[in-house]
Image (cartoon, rainbow over all chains, first blue to last red):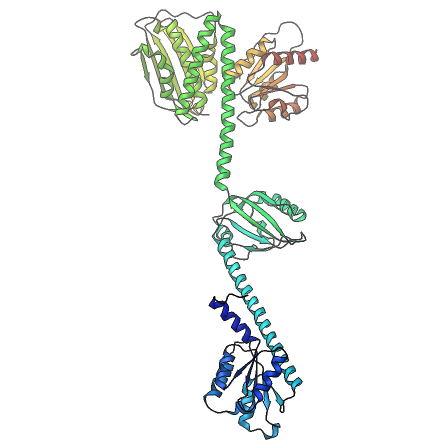
Length: 488
Length: 133
């Protein structure tokens, strides 16, 4: 049961009833009553009206069909116009069928009467007296034709809705595809590119349509083209997802790293309908990753190298020390010095230090002897290896001075001085350590790690020459190196 | 280039080792280690100096080289050059690179990590020396 308290439901019921009913307009005689009786006996609904206005109102309400006498149509005045207007106002799908009960043969009909019948559009004539079966069949046929009109209307509205939905869906797709940050593309099942979003054209700067088909491959870095083709062909052949990192030519002319991905869309039977793909600009991430890899490799190399140097220092110290106690003290002091040199390098740019810093750092542990060092020279940049070597050499010189040289007595002094001088038309670093005021110097009979560090290793790090002289007045060390040896 | 050191005196045919290492302190250490094992050594800081020493000293029977080195050739290229020009010379690599002992090196070459495993290197040198006698 329908809920009649709901006015919209009631209204729906009413129009539904009207659309399957027959309007009957037969104002004179018994025609209306007879027709209605005949129809209702056959289960057909009839609605009697008494005027053309009444009929016009039912036309407006989309009546299923109309049964009307010729003499009722002949009535002049506003009723005739109302009906004409109602008929013209029908929607495109609607053409209400009319059955006209004729007065006699066509030859007797006036021009005006013929015109009124023509105005009905979809009308058939039934002659009187009424033949029951002819009437019922005519009405059934009219209602059936009318039902087909409703079905056609429903189908048409469905198609219009789909068209609208399709339009909205396309508009939505375009809006999404063109607002995301990625480049988006699509291909036919054979890999033929026939769609790129706006981002693709913004990124590449090429004219629209110019990369359709297989022309996209030309946008790749020459070194990546073959690899990309191979992976793409593999996906086309197997239907496996496509994924690759490659360099894509940016409109600036430079290549940028992008991540390319694509997936196939299949029909219910599994057949590939299209490929949909994207390209994401990963240039910054990729470069950062490469730099991190480089830095990790460099760090690993440095750590390994430091350990190898510690190994060298420890084993040489052990080999050349007079006793284990001596060795322990030397190793600890040298390790401390290497550690400080690394700290200093980290605080600078790690690849470059300054010679003044290096001298200060190396001699800092001996600042108890404040005022006994004179340190002077231009603040030249030196490489990390040279900085470490110079730190260690100065440490050895200072340690030796404290034990045997100028710093072993109260009045001794040390001059640490460097300058740039011309030798053979090229700039050279001339670095001097000069002691004075200490006890008489004598050449040691053992050459330990310290003296090898000072005399051999340091010069080698600087690609220069070193000279250690045991002047009786004070130990003197000189390093001479070409300028490019400071940072090589 | 470091001076040659003279330690072998036993009257056997000389079997000298050329040490190629760009880090001077580590080169000093390698030379000490190899001399302690009883072999005369030559030292070079790069491939060019190493080749010059090879050309001058016919007693060099073993090349002991770092892998990563600045200059025109790294250790692998130097080894390939030496293998080509002086095929009988034995080649030993030493490097701080991760996985050096599994590295793809020419046939017959030995690989050691850094810092040096002193004992293993000494016995490898001795094995080579006895195979040459």
